[in-house]
Amino acid sequence: MERVPVRVQIIVAGCVAILLFFGGVKYKEMRLNHLNAEVDVVGAAAGSGSFSQGEEASSPKDLVVHVVGAVEKPGIYCFKEGDRVNEAVQQAVPLAKADLSQLNLALPLQDGKQIDVPFQDTGKTITNQKITSSKKTEKQKTVNQKTTDQKTTESSFAHSTAADQIGQTVTTNGKINLNTANKDELMKLSGIGPALAGRIIDYREKEGPFSTIEDLTKVSGIGTATLAKFKEKITVE
Image 1 (cartoon, helix red, strand yellow):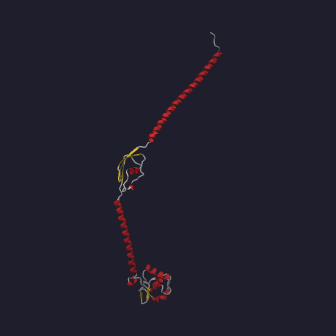
Image 2 (cartoon, rainbow, N blue to C red):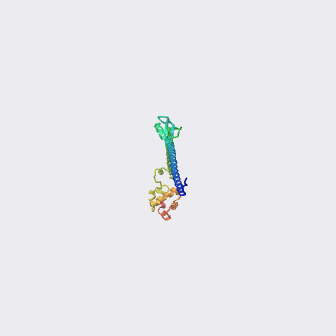
């Protein structure tokens, strides 16, 4: 048997090595493709399960509530999670006498709860009317009392003569009484105009009646010289 030359052996060995190398690469590529396919299948299955769970989680729950009180159709009603008290009340048809202002109609419904629709409190309305009427009566009494007190004060201040009560000026021996004369009467005095007449009246209203004729000089704008012009025409009695 002839011996194979070394050169041929090297070439054959190189060819085998190349075949093994490319065969290994091809095998590895096929293996990776297979694994990727398995991952895709598992991911799809997992994604499908998550979607189903999401759908199940987003599905609203059923709620059962009991509506009683001022409604035409009291009873048990079924709703979905997220529905409001107003929907339950309207479903039971509220009566005309129902007082919906006492309910929070925007409140979400709760499973197993009872909604009691209240009636209008007519007794409360009547009581409020009585209180209002009573307040008006008290206010009127207060106004009447103030008017009476004012009249009494004015009457006392005028020193209570019949002439004073009807607004007339009382004179003594033809003299003008500084404590009872009105503005027009005071303006008849020499040197007394509208302004000074008003000051005389303001002074006696604030300080009280004049005790003497000379007290008139305490009024701003009236001095001894002015008083001398009409001193004989006035009196404080």
